[in-house]
Image 1 (spheres, rainbow, N blue to C red):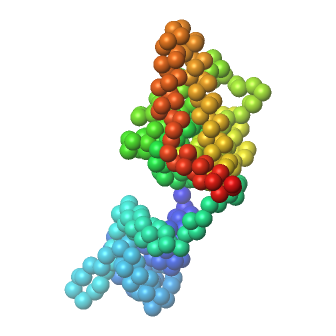
Image 2: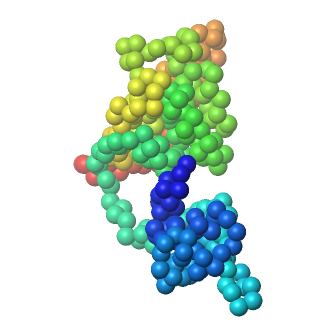
Length: 288
């Protein structure tokens, strides 16, 4: 990577152009005086000393006193980035708290499109972290790996998570429900010929997305917190998972009594989820 590319990266994390030049000059050698840096980068001493002052305030350089001459040394970039990361999360928490009182808490029935792969996973993580009781996920392996850690963290705090997929999935704390039609790992799902990632959270929000098969290229993605649509998607996934559960029990050769016990256990665990039921009751109450 050349100097120009390094300068662009430093500007990208919040340095001004001259700050980036000063930091890079220091980062590539021993401690230097402002006079030496000024000659090295071809900038006026007043501008260089101003940049040194702001870099020191940002924690990117330190001042060394050597007799009457001041010299400056770059703080390792790893430490600079770590401090920026800490500052970001501190500000993020403060801003989130400050804006919470300004949020519109009315029901949002709009449907929103997501245009990039990054937006899909960012929104999915937000939804997963907000879950109170249950998450249903229908996902292919490539997409699952992007959300695995946040799903496991959410399951660890007591949220029920059911993942509909193949029987090779292993996700800590989650119940894996095998597709009833799944036969061979790596099989192409005709006529779909695509990968997908669908999620329903507490019956109050959902996200559906599709990708080109075995590629990280988004075809389309939608999300919504519409009470009616989210409840409908929630119910659809609830019954699809239940159907897969029943078919798989038949395939496993369970007795009639065992199958009934399995159905009852599933119903008791997932059919009466408070957030979903309360939202739907509120919707119909307002409609009457």
